[in-house]
Image: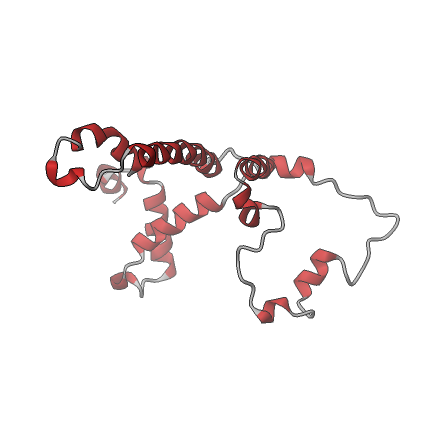
Length: 175
């Protein structure tokens, strides 16, 4: 929207009805400045959505955004609490938390320590791929198809995901 404003600003100044709603000099400079910041953040968002972005790259991107925009520190730091955890999940008897924090059992002294830096670089985030897949499933599973057998749903989902590998003539040839 801001890009569109910047592009049509000069033309809209010639329209009397709209002229009073157009930002003046100082406000216009602020809007253009905001546009530059939004372009930078948009490039970070696009990089995060790339399938080739590793977890280590994500951390580097977040650290740089925190350096450039300190107001984002509460959302992007490595221990940020951006989701309000329910009281039940905070309880001390949450077994998964105890295991991950190592509060119950300490590692054996003879066990080798694990280095995660190389693993983090090799791990690709799959959330975008999975989200796209779920979005396609949502398109398939309409209320009319809610009572499909799982085999039929799986076939429809497989055909939709691999749509570029088949066409109507392929289906006719199979029969």
